[in-house]
Length: 61
Image (cartoon, rainbow, N blue to C red):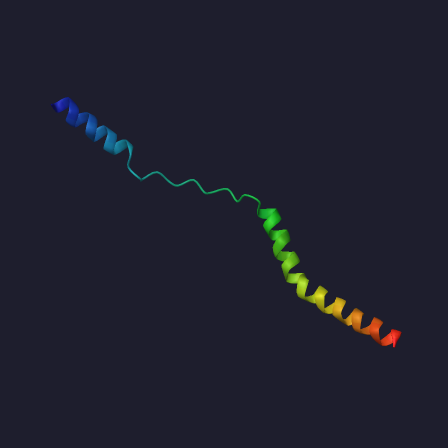
């Protein structure tokens, strides 16, 4: 009986959450950064395209 209690105590001590957590690796971080940059530039690019279309329309009239 004492052996079982000792084994249970050892198992509980081995499973304690006192160990430091390993940081999660940042998977695909460079790709996410590239997408964020592209999303930030997209509105300016769309505005330039719209202005270019207006200029082309003005020149064709």
